[in-house]
Length: 112
Image (cartoon, rainbow, N blue to C red; front, side, top):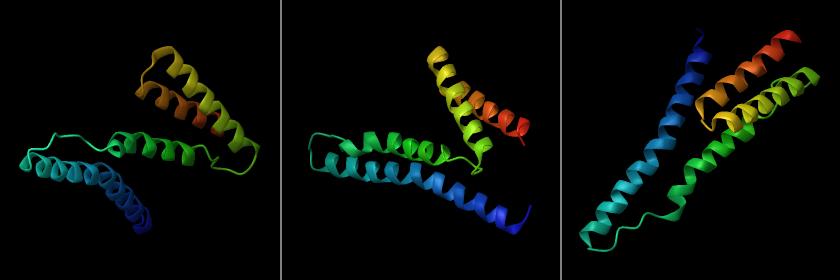
């Protein structure tokens, strides 16, 4: 493993941790402050939306084809269709993502 790859993995890990940790820390402090003043504890609206917005952002960035040719577009399209079809059938998160990525990889390998 090169130093560049190790650094990229480290940055991704820190970013992923921060996306989850910062709202948790902020909400804990917010709740403690509201409990000290005997106010009704109400979480902010944005806290319920931030997870969905981050996932939508990652989805948008993952839909950009890796390659700029027809193979990249086709493999992305097949992966998205496979993901949607499996999700419609099972209504879960893990299996559709796994099979969508698998379909993407198979098409990319076939038309390499």
